[in-house]
Length: 281
Image: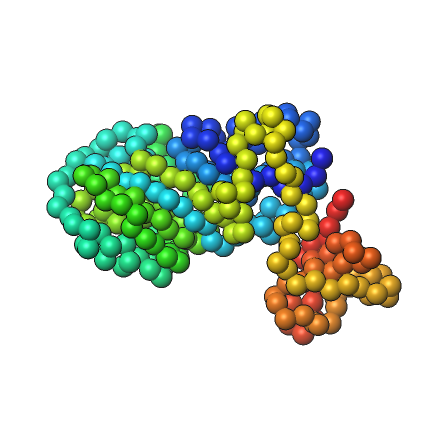
């Protein structure tokens, strides 16, 4: 079994739970995914199966889109509502202040990684430091907030939609939004509605999969928006042997086909194009 499934992950499931179910369902150990969702989070989880596991890095988009809810006035150790409350603080904000604060994070800012995360420092995951009550300096990195929009504000709950670069932690963003609002906040809900070209409206629940109500995406589905070039016999021989090719395409990457079949993905490399991926069937 080979292909890609766009799963709508349920709350309280881990990404590993989803992978384990797909392994069992399709009787294969070759299953991966393109971006972990915390148990509290829901939404788009792109799962690769069989030969398509080689695509995981390629189809991991630079941008992901979320709808998040945050509760003002409380601080937790995990930065979400599942954690232990560490502190509380009063708040006094209005809609315009919230909108201006959200927009202040566009287009880029330096974000501190949360302690409860799988980022490794000196070979050990950060959450292991947290569980052992060990002190560690949390890494910081620049992230991109492509756009952010206030959806609602009522009582102590703010709901917003945001499009971010790969590696952005929404829990950390919520903490930083609250800091600018001179209060605390913790994440209460997170839904990933889009990852690259994969949309939640085209996803399937685990129940859908159980009832065989799904579509397994193939190469043509996944790379439908890529520039393509049909190889002649001589060019096909060169590509199959991994040779560099002249650049005869406009985009950074191209799909080479032969007799209508996907053969390889090439990318620009100085004055020539070099192989990025050979397609397997």
